[in-house]
Image (cartoon, rainbow, N blue to C red; front, side):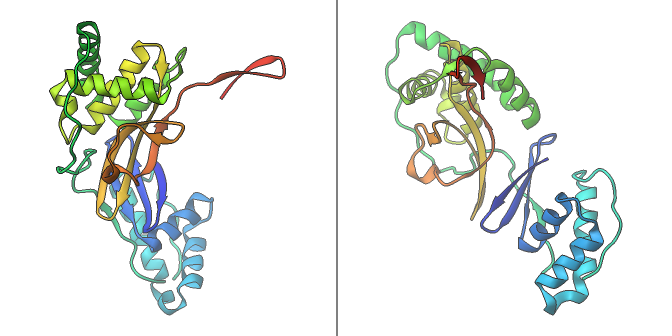
Length: 250
């Protein structure tokens, strides 16, 4: 499970199923205390201290959150019960866990590429198709393996790869195909010996998931309305540099 803080609380990604879950501020407070090694009783006490007006409900709120986490298979072992506080924790699944929920997203019109580049882009798009249907943890594992030996991609190289897959593949050019498009772009960069940063993330108002490629933290080819996502998973390039007379890997 991967957790990321948001302005409204926290978003959880179950990398086995690919489903997102959203916690409100109360649920986030409880989970933070549990993740820091505290018992449910201690988490309830912290909740009661934070929301004294709702202290009588603290134990119930903690129990409710733990029960929901166990039901969703996000918690392995059922810990002990606790005491006392506030608005009930909200843990709800994203109704559409697939990335790129914005049907209004528009991509630039396809341009011209050489026949050789088109063939390579089509192959990368074909390889990306089954990968896009895999679980997030499997996607991450495959990309971690493939990035070895690749140089960091420049913005120009990444933009050229994205342009090629959008031009060569109708599926990659579709508005709701951000995961397929970002993976195909990453694979095409790798076929050319480079690697961008592959990212997937969420926004909460309204809730949506998205996947994209970036260089030095800057999304490549993303229109303004597709910015502002909080990154949950990223696979950056491995950077090799000379440091004090030896090679070091980050």
